[in-house]
Amino acid sequence: MAEPAQQLEVACSSCGATILIEPLLRTARCPYCDSPSVVDRPATTDRPRPQFAIGFTVDRARTAESIRSWLRGRWLAPSGLRRAAAERVQGIYLPAYLYSAAVEIEYSAKIGEAYERPQVDLSSKRLRRVREIEYRDLAGRHASYVSDTVVTASRGLPNAELEAIEPFDLAALVEYTPALLSGWIAEEPSLTREDCLQLAREEVRRRAVGTIEGFLPGDTHQSTSCHTSLRDESADLILLPVWVVALRYHPRRPLVRFVVNGQTGKAWGATPLSWPKLALIAAAIAGLAGLLVLVGRLL
Image (cartoon, rainbow, N blue to C red; front, side):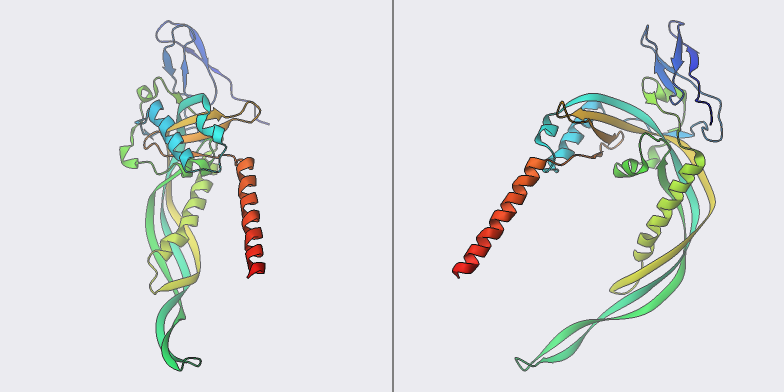
């Protein structure tokens, strides 16, 4: 079993005090003068130096409004969640890999062509037109290049949660400098580079079917199958701005975590369902069903 990474001692550039930086962080604040410190650890295969970063453009106030707006569309969430107090609000530079590769997709599908044929309605003796679909097999090869796939490098924020607040405007990427992180929490990768490559490959392959279905001819299609090959892969470590907000809506309920894109304000959270609201809906459905049965008997 590998030994846990040791904390790193760093001298505060402002007051000279020695502070400890946790193994999975790039930044810390001095407990004596509150000055931020950024450290560049020696690069390793799984923890390379970040190449690029996107700066924060969304502040705390807009983050809170994004969460309130997101909750307004979740009417089955507990009512107290909309009035919940934020116990923790942190802006974090999240480590992620920007993946690019040449993609070749061998595909097959059944292409449907719609047509109409005349048919006599035996009951009315009238001629009507019936829509039918004729299918034929289609197979081919499609080549492209992807350069906009982003996957998490953090165990703390699963890739599904990062996807939920995408996209990021990658045109805003700037070359990484330690000064960009000053005053912010910045995390080191906790997933290996190979783990992240696997995540990126899975995402590219998952999107392959949609890519093919986007240009298939015909009026409809079915049974689309894709075999995807990847080559000339590259993956650069980048830092993405993410707000992480923990809300407590009930003293005996666990915290609910929200993540907000620190560039666009897009929010997401795994909100619990309100059982009283679900019970009311079930009761209303049962009442309506009973009313329909009663009306049916009266008729």
